[in-house]
Image 1 (cartoon, rainbow, N blue to C red):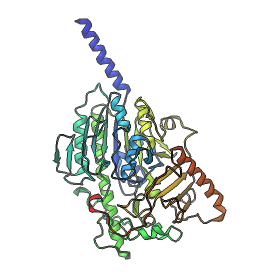
Image 2: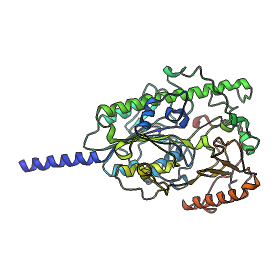
Image 3: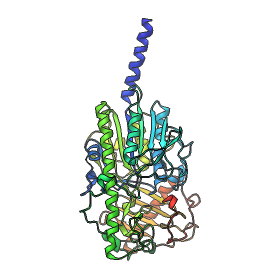
Image 4: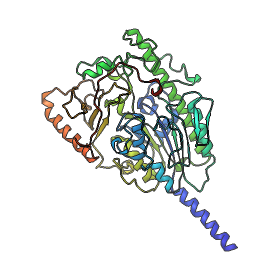
Length: 491
């Protein structure tokens, strides 16, 4: 009996040591979060001390981008490490394939307890549990800022009263408190915030009343831009449109109508304050339980957001505000502290990086790269360019098909029609070093013709490396910018 007891104690010690060598993972994903809505990325108005703390005690990626600026495709790329044409989630209505590997699924197969809480947004009408998670709590569609109906791990649906950000944090903490110290865990929290329709909780409704927010200067610098951008001005995705119902009478291009735009931005910022409160609660619990330093905390957004740049709202385009996302990671033992990484990091890099830090097997296929070496010691072979793609949506007909390349200096964007015929929209070329705000489209400059040719060839090579060529790059026909509003059920 003594021998059995001794062996049992050794087993417990081994399990505890194994768990200690593998960090827990707390992954916090926001929806449509702009980097400049966070203090650590330079916001002058939105104070986010708890998110800033993660950045200060960890790593802040200064130049992070999504490979498709749309919620479902981007989320699938974060989970899989793959571009949208490979994982197959090319729009907001497609399920993440059940057979497709994901980093939480691989962690689960390798001894992690895994759970998902919040907005999943792959499969508009499906709130059932997904593979790879012990617990899966989500809802149909976008969810509501107040009183969302949740599917509680397939055991029934229930409206939980309260503010979304608070409720999803409560749900995650309840699960975390049940975890055993001898088993590492991965908790994934998908916030609704700050997705439209931007509704702050009451305590933050008037937090920015005194802050004036004009239209960006680039809203009126459209003479050298493609005509479709001007056409978008008066639509669901333009600054003179309904602004996600912050403007009741539209279109409205009167100067005084900027007040509606200002109110919209105030509402957006207000929802971010509640996300910072959530991060505070989660980190406080990790500290109280002695788990903070053995937990890889990743905080990021799924895609960027246009707030008036080039006269547009929403995302989908290849312009900087649409592409840029914030990303911070805290795990001092594995990554160090107080680092800022300037190299271009992508959504497809997340999965391979998390798996490496957790000592888990790599994905069977990945278009991304682990940034662990880059963070720890630098990586002279890190990418200097990458490609972006988006397909025209009939449900949201305000953005053409987009194929683009962004290098450390240049950005080239073109708009295929979808049938193999020549492009019908003007292309765009920007020198991001000289013009980070993309105010001057250089595509017509004859002296830059060789640069354009080089970028086109490089774009084709990058796409081909992921299996895309003229034969395999399928896309819908661009039917042009439409004026009608999208169906209320999918906004």
